[in-house]
Length: 119
Image 1 (cartoon, rainbow, N blue to C red):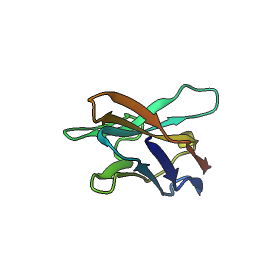
Image 2: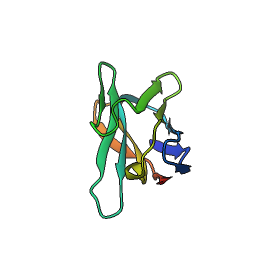
Image 3: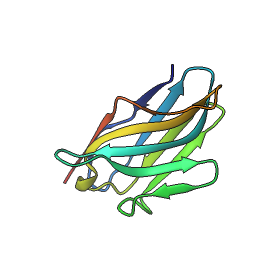
Image 4: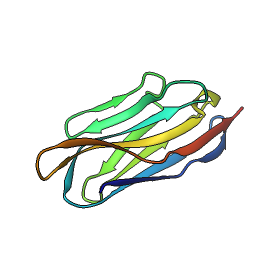
């Protein structure tokens, strides 16, 4: 069974930085893609950044401020968030699309970590 655990959320002032981390544990799978999503109160969950073996995608709202990185050997993924704005306040979720030994793909989510940016 695949598990995703996020860490690194917290409270920060506008203009500050936070680094989120996600660790993927389990066995018998390979990771096809990983990404970060966020959900603000009363809003739909949205993509923040995603990475595959060949591409990286960012939401327009975070381009130039956030950077996604991954360590494939360790099955970890980070999101460096700089120049944070109050509108970045949300619960951030780690997402991983994995493939098992039979070639079946499954999407997995972490439990979420809260980011609050004060003005």
